[in-house]
Image (cartoon, rainbow, N blue to C red; front, side, top):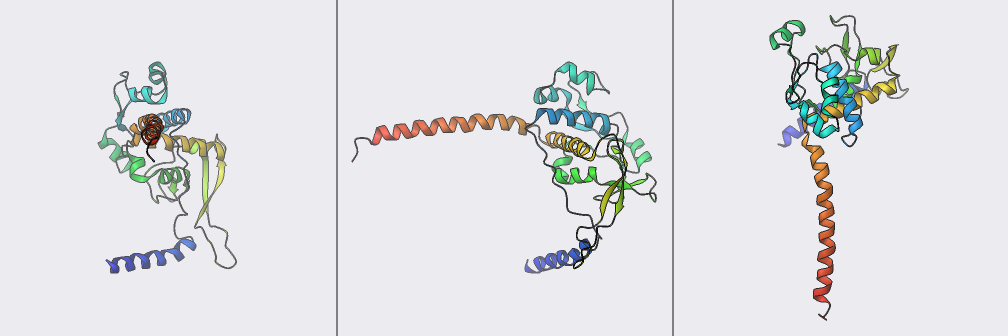
Length: 246
């Protein structure tokens, strides 16, 4: 056990100079994903359907659940989020066959139902902000946080095109944060607007991974309220019981 700890410490120590010299990705950015805003989740659902569901499914989620959880009407969901089916009880599946996907992309795009639980919200946020132009690759782009990814920059129309640059050197320690990305050609959104769009999308992916969390938030409020009332009643009963005891 001690030997494993020492080996892990050695690997981390050796990796630090490589990171500082620009040999690795910068630290993950904080997504600030939130489930307490139905408007943000609605915007995230719209982005997911319009930009992600061409290749990625969410087979563990039904459209009817969006009506229940996100405050959307059934008519709104059918008109704006359902393009592959007309049944509100169907799952968020896609028509593309796995065999075709593997032929076109070299790998089957994963189902995104639990991707936020597998990868983490910060990783997804950083990944979607980390695409940059790479003329050496067939798809024309690469990713700072997932090198040689098979996924194209499907949101580049919103974000624009980024290019990879080296971090400015510190006089004493050299480059401190690995390579950086800077905007080369703007998209239809400003960097701040695009960051908000990605944050909403990541929030929706977090919701996909555990929809019951929204229910627990509601139930949790009433549970805490009940416990507070019970505490008050217990305290008053204790005072009544002990008032004649000296």
